[in-house]
Image (tube, rainbow, N blue to C red):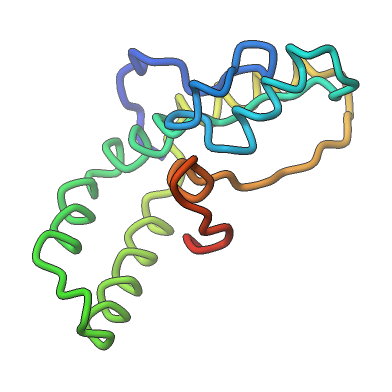
Length: 140
């Protein structure tokens, strides 16, 4: 993977660092786990890979502009165009992979959990679960 400069924003955040106001950077599940942790409920320790890590990965791979271009003049009524561009977007994201700085941040956080700890991994898109929307699973 690429050796990009160190990111200026954190790539991961611990549940205890998150609140409902962090939905845009941590997703709905991540922000809610922060709220549950703050409320003193029995949430196992954990962390969220922040949305900035995705942006950083796409930038490091050099595909951000191409991804943005895929939706620039997209016709929401043209299902064939939508499918073709979605397939191209999937291809770009898969090819991009994870930059070394991101991989290192994730592994560092994982190792802070303890040796050989089992974890649950969930996706939490930043636009799926908001006050005005609920599109769970929409962004495969």
